[in-house]
View (tube, rainbow, N blue to C red):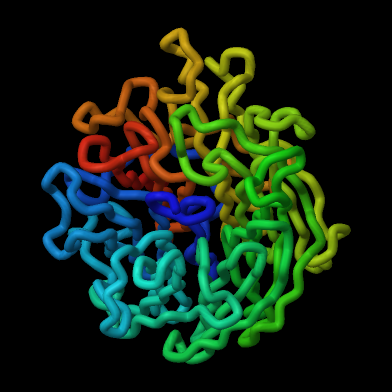
Length: 473
């Protein structure tokens, strides 16, 4: 088992439900530069965040915190790992102090909590999902906690998996009204748990069996209340080969567990090797995410190889679109919009840099879409391309559904000399292989982004990772 995620190591954060149109990134005609703000604890060790927002201006960031980093851990984290939340009531301008989501699950004290994800219903009810483990060998449970007071407390905390998926990985959730949907996998078994009473009771169903190792990677809800999820599944137990990963979407009918999967919509080759001795399972491997815009168009951003048929080819980010009214559980409903990242625009010597961890969100206007990713185009500035520095977070926006882009990639991450991992040309290493974005209800529209920055993959008290937030409002 990895330090943070058992089979793909807490992968893509996050994911995010774009339920209310006011919560989604607006049709940004001029990409905005943002200044990063550090969240979490003063010493780290904060890993792989997710973010969600509501129409009233509340923004919620969640992450897994590892105890003992720099003497600055929260006083109530004990000796184990816990899910934490930090909230803003003004669109991300200022933030409250981080606090624990749930120390126990109905009185059961799991030693570890990881793989955090967050979603908020159009009713304003907040749901935080995470994995809990350490009680029963390698078995991992999916937990969902509910808050009705804007993340201040969580009055309902439920284990939602089993028996169809007794040991789970990588949950993602979406909500609309009182309907809440969380997907996760157990090896190649794909499951969904659905609540129709705002998280009080849950019904689980096995909905598919694909590949060798499956991953739920993102979710949205359409105008009729159907839940759509993206999946990135490894064809082999070690996620190697070309192709190594298959990308699908699924549709779950409103208020039910009735789920239909698309065929494979795209594939990607085996990801590059991690520059450290171990980064967990397929750390630079296949990932995807799904978004929906105000016109009902769906988007699938996914990682591919620069040479599609070549193992360990430097990764790139591609985009598919399914127009509203099309059959999006059919391959015929999707159109390739081509490549999104522009990692080669500067400093990417020999095109050897990596564009990784794609996330996508549709805007409130039909055709508006935002994609974020990380790349290390600045890694070569020190004369060596070794993928252990020069990392930054970038985004692009489109008002034409991905047919064209409003400009080059805009850098979100920024140099902070007070942080050990930060350098003028970028941070040293991605701390966690997921990040996420959400729409913010601000004048002119905008997005909020979260990601993790680290010194190396190992983390810990001497090499803590940190959570960063940026807003384009």
